Length: 184
Image 1: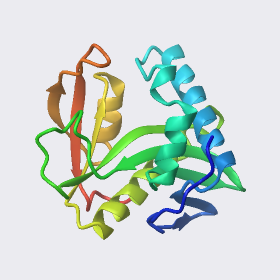
Image 2 (image 1 turned 60 degrees about the horizontal axis):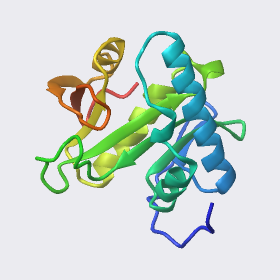
Image 3 (image 1 turned 120 degrees about the horizontal axis):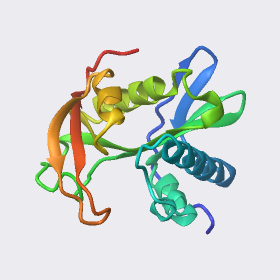
Image 4 (image 1 turned 135 degrees about the horizontal axis):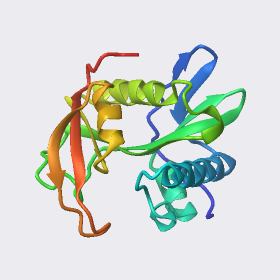
């Protein structure tokens, strides 16, 4: 990884029940995010849910996201337990979006040993606060058809239908929530 450059990272911090959600800051946190993504992806494939290929989150790419303030981590006891990417544009999946229309969530992942403990809700709450602070009216994400659609619907997102994705060779479901989605 190359040395970290000066950046303007949104300094949004969410604290709840001894857990912290904030932008990833150090090289060791980038590595922890990489490991979390990999373990979560392996676990989802074991459960029969199509997920990311390993080459979709290279370590160097995660470092670049960190440098731009787009890599977010959920921490407990000094350990990164969950991660996501929050972008301000997403031309691949939302090419028709206007400027400042939404914040875009990608690759939300939870370490398998802490799955089922509420991390996705906490990360999505952070993303909603981020969108509010950026005056962006929507949160958007894309997911594969299947159980994850219902998972996000239970968290205030609604399906906007399938979107063809040539890069991954299958359609994704585009989903949207208002930044005022119900907090968990």
